[in-house]
Image (cartoon, rainbow, N blue to C red; front, top):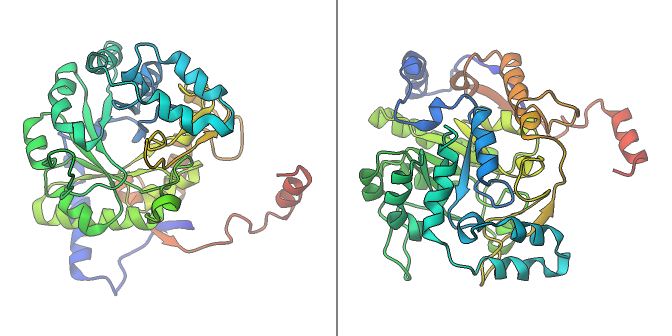
Length: 381
């Protein structure tokens, strides 16, 4: 898939679509002040993965203009010092890794560590988000807000406004949002109707993506998922419908499946307001996992939906996010790549970039690259 510069409205577009384009351009300067993501210098979040985010990583991410998400159900809140556990995970042989992950995640979450982790990041003057499973969202919401978290993410494999469970009381996003003064993000979702229902509950943002992550096996285990470009476009369409009906804009965050800067650019061109990244950041020297990471559902005691993967350590977080890039494969200077893509497509803002025309181009990565391909074959890659 490739991108083209924004095109003029087609004669086949409806009057509503054309009117919505004028409305968005006219209201662009107003922003959405209560949304924390809009105030980020870099519209990129680090995924709530134990192989990526610890306190040190969250501070560095914030200093570079983005925001990291700490997993409140992860190792950072189960162990006072998770360093040894992380090293054990990195060093474990492949045939033992799933059992080990299930074992180390059996340790209970220590509630006092939730506040301590948030406070440690905030002490550096850095914005921080936290992620929790739906079952714990209501109980933990007051604690995370009091500790100073800037955003609460309620995250499950697939989430809807009508989430039903036999093991705990159904979560009401309406009540949750009404009880908090900080933004609430919900995910994950890939469907227009489900996204629209979630937006109607009062959430501030929605995470898009089921199973695209490099370490996630949800699509194979459950057979559930939608490719990210289509999923982002469908949820963005729900955002526009909701914006037109209410005047309130809910942020769409593409979560997972992006390997290089070009993928990130395509996510924004598909309609995203921000992106959430895991694997790319796991490969930085600042990440918690020592060159490894694993899916958030990997430790599930009954049905693991992920695996540990080795991504190595290819550069610092600063190099990956802001450059300068030392490699030419698109894995470094992600912000520079996004800015360049916007410039090439004639977009001055992300809102304009969302109007960029997309074309189906399966051969674009290989077109005219004969000598590059020959060199890769010769190197055994």
